[in-house]
Length: 244
Image: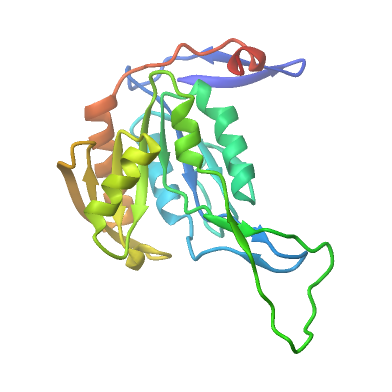
């Protein structure tokens, strides 16, 4: 286990014994993000964070250390994990870039907004009777950006698809540089149950699970352990080294 301590503004990573001798430090993204049009309105989606919370619990129960980067959610994350709260997609990306260098892998279960308003109004947008044309631009690709900067860490992405799920998920896996991709559908949004398929870079189906999100998460953790288990990262001694 790696415990985060603070000594005079420095973060020091101290190794501790853990019941799981191949315990990993895992970064999980969870929940939605928000992209504001004005101080009171924003773009978002219905992601609840339930899958992220279930994954955090499953990894902790398996003896791993967990860091959760979470957008705004109503769910509670299990005691024992470090939670970093963010709002926008850019904030989620920045938090992941800061946390990932000291992690062995990442499970990108969040549903960040893919678009944001091109212009932000510092005051409330009011009715004029003429309608409103909203121009959107893409937000940063969190998984793709993190993957481009990794060393030997593994990355498991999620893909919520409405059509040609395996085909579109595999395209996403290769575009982002993930090692596995978990495919689900809109029925999973804000639901206690889910059904997923897991694909590898060759398009091979390596897992298919249905049930409560807690049950599915335990099976996903077992699959991840079987493929990527074991320490991969030499932990830096300070936050400065983590950024190098």
